Length: 135
Picture 1 (cartoon, rainbow, N blue to C red):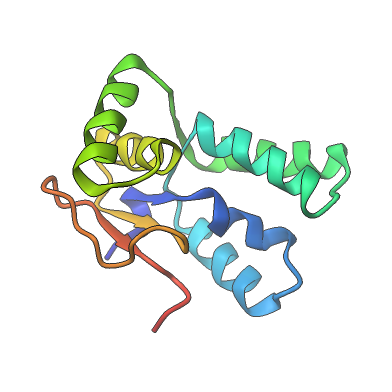
Picture 2 (spheres, rainbow, N blue to C red):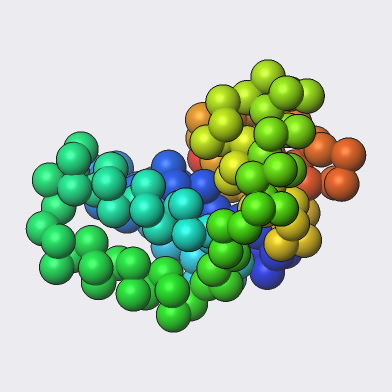
């Protein structure tokens, strides 16, 4: 599946700061093909990179600038929120995960790379959740 319309969940991008070089390399390869993130992903990335990885703000800002320059950034809108509510209810997801799925769905993505949601789940629109670290 082409990564051109792939959406990246925050947990995938965070592997760029992880101690696992295999996952970091896989993340870099996927990002090289381009894709989509949302403003929520940018915010979550900054929060977790700061809190969990104790990354300096200069490094966080540099990573965010690269994401913004190389990936399409989907806005958070009322339509995203409303779609997220529907998805949270229908698939029993927390609202923040549902907002990620809603942003990907509204951006016309066909795959979302994620580790913490339900790999293999396919929405009615055709958006499929894929763990890129599982063969």
